[in-house]
Length: 359
Figure (cartoon, rainbow, N blue to C red):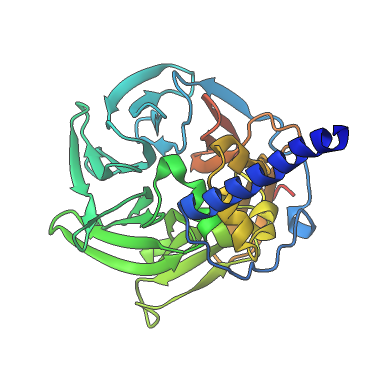
């Protein structure tokens, strides 16, 4: 009798586990695909650990998540926050409200007229005037809403290049895109004067940061899930074609910014190891997809990590901080002699002097 009593809880546990596994399999919001992760060098060679970011200073923000920073010609800087606010701030630390997108502003940049062009994850590509008024430029393609507008850059002729990270998932459940691996990210161009919207590149594993190259000859887009940067040629004999600009990054590239000379700054908020480890385990990913977001995030390894890459794709700068003073860095924007840092997990922007060839 006592043996049966001891066996009962184990039976209940087993049955309960089987029921949960069945429910999780059926309720999973993803249809996981198998992919082959590219080679991952880890923190070795040009990516070896250092403390170059340990001296970064910060300016507090009134809300969490200044994902990107835009440079103003008057010395003012701008960023978007988790609650939808766009704020301006000075290098001295004064912060003022500019407007509100009623969404989640991510990448942003000032156009030639001084208006802010904003990649809003929920509302699409927006324009915000100096009075804070918001105009929607693009929020759909081919009759379907854009689900995750992420980052942008603006060419000298006014053309806006922007990414739509995923056709499947939105900002609040973005981790599901990595667990599914369906690779539905896209890169677009938009002509504000004519309203012409063009699809330049599709099939990206989370299309993220966008940056134009020298003389707007090409545009780069970060492919977060595969640790690489793709290039689309806009001018010259290769116009209309695409290739890889740099691959085998050990982190998950988020935003990318060009300094106007010879360096692209790529921010990597976490390491790739966790994403790579489950690439060939669709059943595991399906089960994890029903867990709370905090548990889904367990696969990520937050870091403080920014690299500088030449126009030839050579890594010339490697900025890290093992102490994670300012971490989960999503953008590194050069403004003059200062590199401004954004993060989804911090309530501040970071900054430090631009360093020449720090390794």
